[in-house]
Length: 107
Image: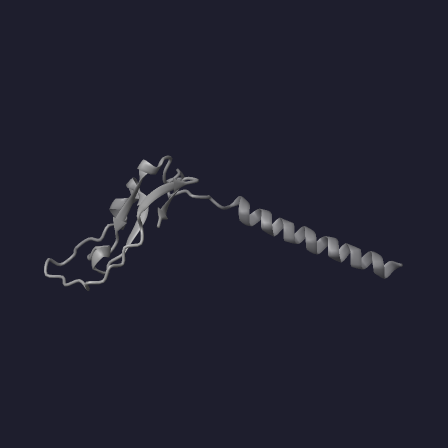
């Protein structure tokens, strides 16, 4: 009878430890927030497509959806004027929308 009690205590301890770890992980998360602690967007109008490479997506470059505030930091900078881009259509984002405080691509 004593060994059953030991097994039960071990199982209960493992379950309790698992729950503590899960709660610790999720309580420290900041869902859909930028570094300042606020949501990236409130409405779809707060989200914009941003060209993150020197070439546009129509010429092989990349684009992402971001909040207007973050857009400046993500925009490609210092692009050479004589840059040659590959003629490959890589645009996949039709528009951007605000989903639970985060800007997401609409394909």
